[in-house]
Image (cartoon, rainbow, N blue to C red; front, side, top):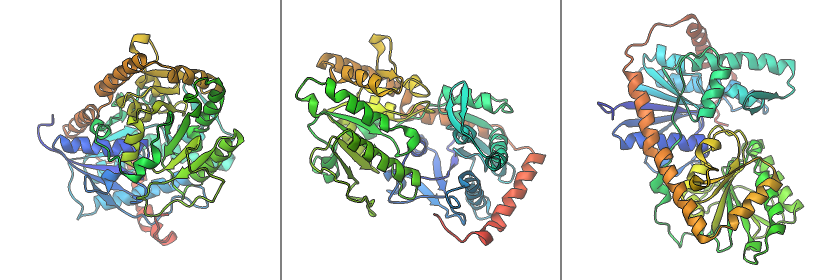
Length: 482
């Protein structure tokens, strides 16, 4: 434990619904439980698209609306992300801003040198995955499958990539969400000399054990006596949720039991209608389900103040083969994971940096099927048989269908034994207390480093950009959080 309670400011770009956001929420809650004071600062916080803890008073969230859009005609996302965070940084460094002992920054490192040099405070950075690798192509460990990029795009990305590496290495302590991310970050950010310490994302286990309201219409809408496969992922193309639909279609002809022949798939995840990728991904998944003659329905929680508008697409409201659940609630997530009808959890992204979904499933004792790459290879055990908590397979629909056939065919004894092992592993390695403890150690270590050294040349260059963003930006772009 820390020798004294710390005042900690979290800086996160967009407090929506996703794995990174879940980590921030649970890390903040965990630190609060350990006696620390936590404030979260963000450039975007939509009360219709966020986790409950960020709006029910559990956490103090400061939404600072920036004068910059998220993009310009669908382009320059990372440029505006930098600008939005610099604007957020000016809010933290204003004379009337609260004093903090240390800053915890994740995802975007732009603000680190300013918080250190101008705020004179130490900074802990939590690395999810280098943006330069996400932007430049499909990353497979050991190689970069690069997209064909124009000269203009390469010229645009060069300073962005330089800025990411330069600002990241100025953090006093750098954490990574998995050994996979730590290896890759060190390999591609060669100027970083410090060792990246792994602190696995943790989850609030008690939230998955809470008593559910059986009369809650939102829970009733997603649960069923029909054997169920579930997937929890944002509706983004890179998450490869299409693999789950293809695997279901390949599995159905293999099922001989009349009960299992009614097997359904629930695809639940964050959906932001502002994002073209979300919209196109959802529509492409619907088209894919239709191509396999699978019935489907699309629903949102009844509590959603602004329901997502989906045009009528011949949906089936009663017992569809595929249920699309947009922006699920915490209660719906727990209801799905704890339902006795849920037979397997499908985690479709390949080379995922960590992936909180498999851990959520393991906490609830649900067998996991995930890709055999990236973070899930650290959370899910495929062998030996006596330690098995799930299946790791190459992302091929026929291969997944064979694995699913094994999973749905488990007898009660086999399923109970696997569930017991999964719960024990999740509690030991991925509980919120374990994550909070690891982050707390890093924060205390950073505070113990004492005063921050004076500005270097690179920091002065970035300070100039900081001033430009602060004074010139509002003149170019009208105030908007879109």
